[in-house]
Image 1 (tube, one colour):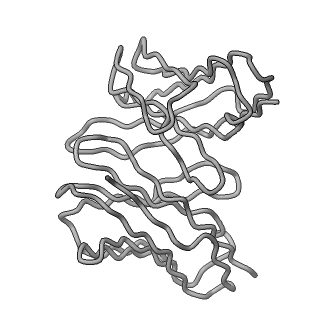
Image 2: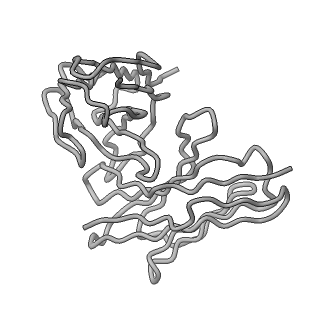
Image 3: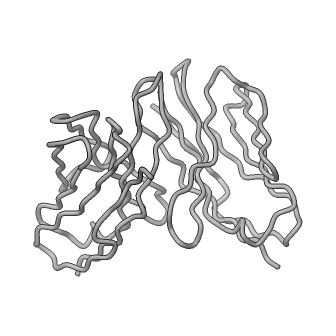
Length: 114
Length: 114
């Protein structure tokens, strides 16, 4: 069955370190998204991609970067982790059938920055 | 600007009660899409429904029903005869036409007590 996976599921790191969170989908979806979830804020869009070699900034992109070298993967990199980036991170993907398509989410990665 | 408001932060009901979760949205798009997701205590995000702006018909799926009213910019979600397994955080989301990006509300935590 097609799915979307994230790794690691839990990560503890120190301030200033570079961290990469992986997202892999087997839906063959063109669109991929990264969100962070924090209490009182719901889910906020960090970066997104509409296809290979395409990346775009979302609402809260400062301190994060992504790259899209193939259809299946959109890794999220925290260049220099900060305590404010402690959060739960969700990856999602959607197709481009018609005007819209439903986003399906990965299981999430809980990141703690000490 | 687009915005989704879920004014109810937390709701507690006793099992078998009916409960309505409110969602109010703002958009200037004439074509847009609305979604509801469920996040149970295990943390994953589960898609419940997608509705486009041209379809104001109410929808019922088992104990779940949705009321979409463009006149009041609302897309409310009702659970009939609630059960403990309905305890979760519920998110409403809005997508502008052709963007494939979601704006999420801050979520409503529903607690169903036995």
